[in-house]
Image (tube, rainbow, N blue to C red):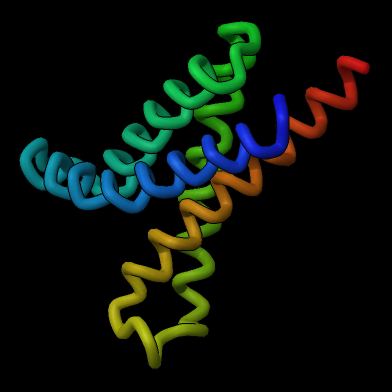
Length: 121
């Protein structure tokens, strides 16, 4: 896949992460579930859609990578927000966690893409 196409797909994925976070939090309140579980499942679904439409790898690999990336990125985003590095700019650290989650997901997708690309050569 060309670099321009990957950048476009990552930009769309970043935008989807930022805009869907509020929806996932609202859905978690309606379902009365833990917000981390709701957001993790929602981001895993977004990742699965991205993997099947963008990457078009084997289905099992798509699902495993999607769930692993969503879980790891959400965990690391919460840990990064707990460091309180940007508490002067974001007092509740919600925006910090959302942006960190989106950026880490894109970084992890690129790592997985590069590993898969190198292994296939």
